[in-house]
Image (tube, rainbow, N blue to C red; front, side):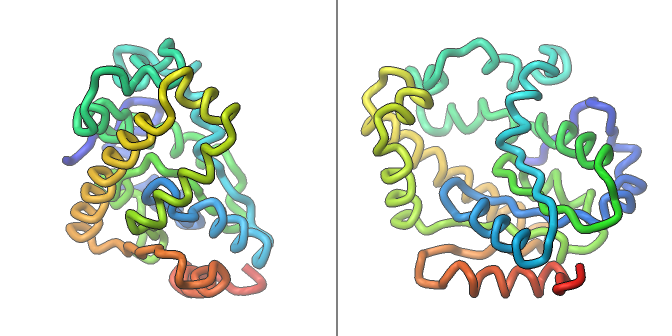
Length: 231
């Protein structure tokens, strides 16, 4: 599914110049529970780099989005926790995701263009598809997509939501096991979309199964990103 970049200040016509302006950015995207944040923290600590956390920024975007420009994101704004899963199949939830329609990337780009450009910035964010990101890259080596195996993701999410308070904050009073099953099914579909688009745009996908130490994965991605101790 090819997405379109919403009008949040950055338009399709400006993408070539935007890619030059974002030449210092390295993107860590992919699937839920794949270790994106762990990898970003490791690289940031090793190389003294700032991390742009898209998950944190999403809360601010909810106050900026409009139904005209961001219909899918706006539709989620007033929903109580977990309500997006009510009565929907995994495919229906996937198709209702703002990221499937490119509604998030314009916010990310505008935020990055407002940041200093004197050193590399690491982006840690789930909600970016390869087809949307590819026009913003000066070269494929600026991005990597992490996708976990089904077993690895299941174990990560089970541990993440074992805390009842965290589960309620995310899913409300719904049965955690039922919502988790739907979440895992949705994520399988998201991963398939990422893999297909990444192959079409010749972008790197790394499969994470827990067998490779995080430090070794960081070494591999650092080389891909062209990082060094003085970056």
